[in-house]
Length: 212
Image (cartoon, rainbow, N blue to C red; front, top):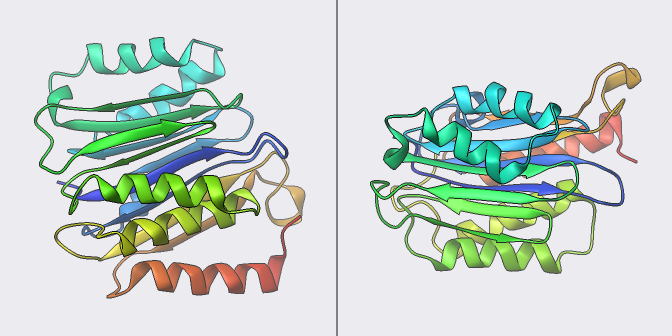
C-alpha cells in the first residue's frame, strides 16, 4: 500500500510535464511517476497498478481522449477499487480516479493543467493545500510542483509519516546535453525528511545543470 500524495502538472508556456510525490513507502519514485515529453504524465498509487504507466502513456501517444484512457485502464483492472491515478496530457487536460476501497482519507482534486491525489492522508485539506500552492506559485513547473508537495506536508500530509519522495519533469530535448527528455529526475528513496532532501537535491541540480 502506497500511502501517498502526489501532483501531476503541465506548463502550457514550456510544454513541460511533471510529477512530484511523497510517500510513507520505500522508493516511491520507482513506482508512482510516469511521464513522456510531448505526450503526458501519470501518477499511479494506493495499491498501485504500475501497468497504468506505460499503458496509459501509450494511449496518450495515440491521441486517445484522456477520459477514455482512464476508463480503459480501469475497465480491465479487477483491483480498480483499490487504485488511485492522476493523468495530465500534453494539452493540459486532466483526469483522476480514487477507488472506493482506498484507505481514508483518500481523494483527488483537479484544476487547470494539474491534478492532486492522495490516500491515507490526515484529511482533505492536504490536496486542497497542494492545489492552492500550485495555482499561486509564480514560477516554472518544477518549482510549482515542489511548492505543492511542501504545502501538502504542512497541511498534514501522509497520516503514517514520511519516507521517500520523487520529482520527475520532462521536456523534449531538455535533458543532459539535449540528448534526452529528462529535464529533472530526482529521487529520495529513504529519508526522515524526504521533501526537504528533494529540495536540496533540486538546488544542486540547478547548480550543476541549470534550467531554462
